[in-house]
Amino acid sequence: MNNNQLCGLDHDGDGNYTAEGITKITKMLSVNTTLKSISLAENNLTGYGSDMSGIIKLSKALKENETLTSLNLEDNHLQAEGAKHMAEALLVNKTLTNINLADNCICLGGEMSGLLALCETLKINSSLRELNLRDNNLGPIGAAHVADALKSNSSLRELNLLKNFIVDESQLKQAARTELKLQL
Image 1 (cartoon, rainbow, N blue to C red):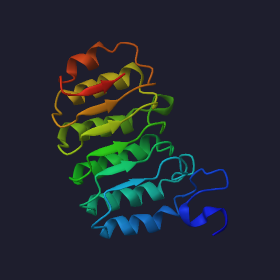
Image 2 (cartoon, rainbow, N blue to C red):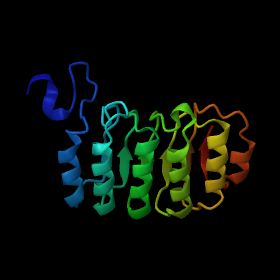
Image 3 (cartoon, rainbow, N blue to C red):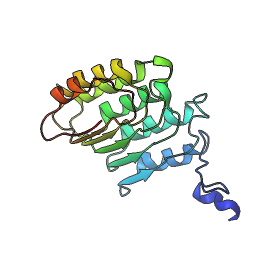
């Protein structure tokens, strides 16, 4: 087991599951009946945004999975397109309660389509309790979209929006219910 290849780690201890490598994991998730939590953080699941095939497969698997409650996709360069696929999965999946999408360049270059999809999903999804969108370049426009989504969501309990260049936090604070732990 040289270089921990079966563990998905390179010689520096960083993840190395690629879009191709995630295929086996997504097949497992489609039929999983016991696994509750999985972290795929800090991998190269999208080839730095150039290959969404692994995320598309993951989204499909999440639509079928009925046991996973926690998913960590931090730092996988999902960008707007990958965020849209995760939003699609969250429309169908009723068991995920915690998803970490931190540091995924979701609003790279001011592209808001992925965030808009996630916000529309937040208005409908009633199972998600914790969402981490830290460090995704949301800015003031993205913050306004999130604030609008929060007005319709009653299930979210924790929302991390740190490091998103949010200048005016007032609209988010006004939209957030008292039981929502909002990190700005």
